[in-house]
Image (cartoon, rainbow, N blue to C red; front, side):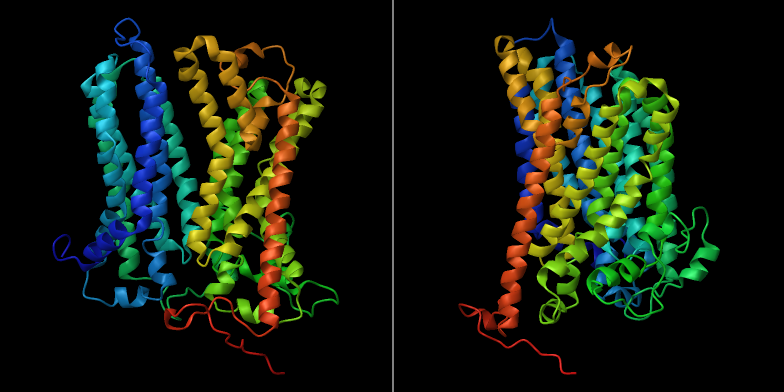
Length: 574
């Protein structure tokens, strides 16, 4: 029932392991890890006298592997149950003879199987690092055991989130926000115990399994009980949400749509006619689309982000002013996780509902459709991000060190605003060119990570390893890598000059020196990327609009025979 006779497990394993995405991820994963080891490999043949450097290389290898696996775990598991709801097979699955616990177990194992292949595939690369010295076998064992237990916990968290939401995008964001503090805590603990590998192994064998068991067992029982008596069945698996009743029963933060600041991103339902000249696309999106599935996701987003922001805000903005860029980086990470959700499904949802061609046959122009979709999604994501910006304004008013750095504070705020715009436009662009919301969302995250995070990671890696292998080329390497970070808001935030007395503490580990030119280059690069993407969307939608207006659907192909045939689009009769 659970393993050999579990049809859910067998079917999901076949689907996940045969997907092209799994093969591509395995290839990219191996290439990235191999490139890290190759470029960090020391010139010396023996490192007996420099074991600290070898240990640092292995630690960075495992940390990079841990971060990649933590990012990929929700992408496989967060759609395990929401996928059934989106395919309208959720009720049939619940009506089958399978036990809810068997369904949950099958979903968990099948979603983590591709990640297990990635972990096994990285073993040969790890074995190459052991002869360098400085790292013992039990440290490698502790690292892999901790990695496996963490991935199991993250997968179970994602499946639980998937049981509470109907859309994969909402489940994915909630999973990332819950996993983020656990991942950060694990990284801090691992780096703090860098000098004692045996103690790492003891903690990994004793404390970590107990924590993992408590999390997984509790969430497993909760998910199974929820599937045994599901509250989200009926009407094709769609949960009918009464917002007033939900507000009465909600614990913690409650969103009041008629009060400030909630009405900025959640205006009350319209009970009158639209005024002349109002964009109907924007009006519909901002009034109904966000809360059509309840307020659970928004409550989780706001509460988790604010709880995490409190210690970071206190330390980086008020106690250690030179570390203010770290708080700006936290705000940027929040927007990266949350921003694409409200725009990545803007156009794909029209395709999934089969209303895109009908929408293009109306008198609404493509420009109105685009800016209505963009502004509606951007308004929500930017307002949620601004909840984390008010501590910056409060710090400026209370801490005298910021009074002489008002230009730097303004640069921080502009970096955040440009990040909000960039993430929304990238998400909307992916929504225009892809067919499914899940594909659009995952592609959006991939593009954002490539633009925002990869330059920062390459800079840190080059500063720590490549320059040590070739000290005579240090300046040239660092300068070239530094210039590649113009697309990253993290690089721009850490390049903003800030003049305080204890800045030396930050300069010791600073990879981006003070450089206003770097900040200006980021604004130019960001605005350029946004302009190109916006122009491309207008062109693509105008082309589709012209074809639809002429009565031809370019996306239909009869029986796969050659070019698509001219099939009239249905017209609307008053």
